[in-house]
Every structure is written in structure tokens, then in C-alpha cells.
Amino acid sequence: FEDDLHELYQMSAHMCDFESDESSFITALKPGQTFEKKWLSLSASADSISLDEWVQRRAPGHGDLMLQMDIEGAEYANLLSCSAETLQRFRVIIVEIHKLPMLVRPGRETCDAVLLAERLESDFVTVHVHPNNCCGYVTVPGTSVRVPRVLEVTLLRRDRIDIGGHSYQPKLPHPLDIAFNVRRKRPVFLDDSWRGGPPTKPELVKSLEILESFLNWQDEEDRRAAMHGK
Image (cartoon, rainbow, N blue to C red):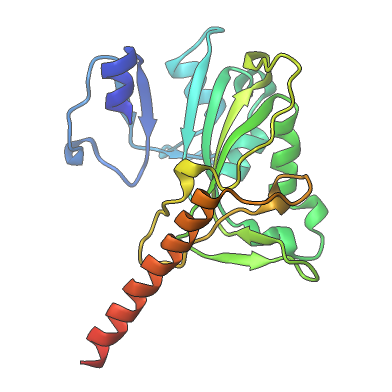
């Protein structure tokens, strides 16, 4: 990802991950790329760095930035605690959101997932959302709404959006999202309940692709069961 940004758009990239090491990278750091072996965290330890501190250190000023974040649940603390000035520096945020079953638990109106959604909604619009089928889903009690345990979300800052007053109906699942992340896991898709509108008749091609995904998964399950039986 970072190398594509460098090669295609001449963009710098600043990375941090305490569990990684520069010596194990597939490609060496390119000009404009930096790496810090640190957790992105509010901890005051020498092994951690906050989002505010990281931005101030690597990209001070007022220019637009892009944030890509996959930190296994720590996204809540980091995005909820960073300053408004830091958050608004990001034109694009690409984040994997974890632990979403908290949405169906008692007291969910004050859970981190709701608080984070409320904070991001003031400055950003969700332009893409994809359920990662790695961990399945939970069903909201008393409804048929399925909440994936992990969602991949792309947000665009509101001042970068202009749809000219036209209404737009999201496509769920989007045609490019029919394929799933983990082939050995049951496919997970977002349905009309996530669109916030009335049910729509799915496109025939999309329906067939979704069916094909389930059939491919079932074939894999049957093949593994047969191998195990032998």
C-alpha cells in the first residue's frame, strides 16, 4: 500500500507498529517513508506514541493527510482521544473497526462504537464499507439485522464531497465487495437494513455472485470435511 502511494502518487508514508520490524519488510523504505517501532497508544511508555504526537512529529502544519489504521480494537481509544485539529487534518480515513458485538449489548447507546460513529459523523461521510468475514457476525435481538464483528470503513472529509444536490442510493453489497476476505470462513454481506432505506430488489448479477460466494464456501467446507473423514 505504502509503496503504491510512493510509486503512483509520490506520497510520503509514515508507519508505526510495535509488532513489526524494519528488517522484516519485503521492500526497503523508500524516500519519504518512515517507520517507528511503537504502539499507537495513549500510554506514556517509551514504546508508544499518540496520534496527536505522531502527526505533529511527522507532518506538522496544515496540509491534508490520509490515515490507514488497523490496530485490533485500539482504534477507539486513539480516534476518540485525539484532538479535533488532528482528526480534521485527514482528508481520508481508512480504518478497520473491531469489537462491533458491543452494539447489541445493554448500554450500547454509550458504547465506544456509538461514540466513535458520532464523533466521525460530524466531519466525515462514509463512502465505502465492507464486512470482513474473518470473525462472523451477531444478530440484533428481536430483528434480522446482522452486525459483522469486523468492518472495513473508508471515510471522506465532508468538505471534499460535492454530489450536486443529487440523491444517491448506496449499493450494498457493492459489486466489487462480493468477494470475501477469508475463503475458509462463511461469507458476510451487508443488507438493506444498513442502507437506511426501504428494501430494494437486488440486481440479478449481484444476487448470482452472492450465491456463488456461498456455494464456493460450502464446496470448501465439504472438501475439508471429506479430507478430515479420510
